[in-house]
Length: 203
Image (cartoon, rainbow, N blue to C red; front, side, top):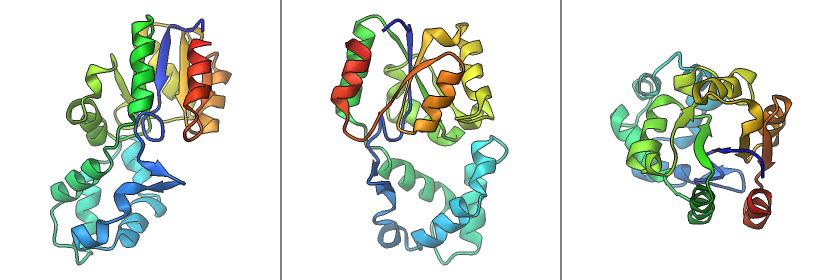
């Protein structure tokens, strides 16, 4: 592989929190939090409100607080976020091993994720991924997200490299396609395709 820097998507690649398209943190939300995960998802995501959070225009904690104000759930915003982030923390040992091998082979590694600021900080510090990569690029702090060209261009400017130096690993084909349009290389990671990922990186 000619690229010098590998940009790893997080959820669905380094973090095995999505199975058959379902986020595992939702499974016991009703029982554990005393609120409806269906209502929570409708308010946060399906309504489009979360778009402002990903764009860096709104704090996710404030959005959770707004939902709690019209919900029967008795938890605090911080309790909801701590539960969500902790339940969503399911690092994939196999992709992390591949990342470690890539680093040993001389490749630089970064995370490139569509996450907001609070969870990006949780990924870097609480989950310890700051020790695996040199930078966590996240949509909220960057105020742009994949597959917008600005997301990839911000990474290039920050690292001081061109697209030809970068290789994206992502579980969404449209994100890889957008990266390639800007001169990056990339690999569309399908669930469980560790062999294909190893072949793409190491030949």
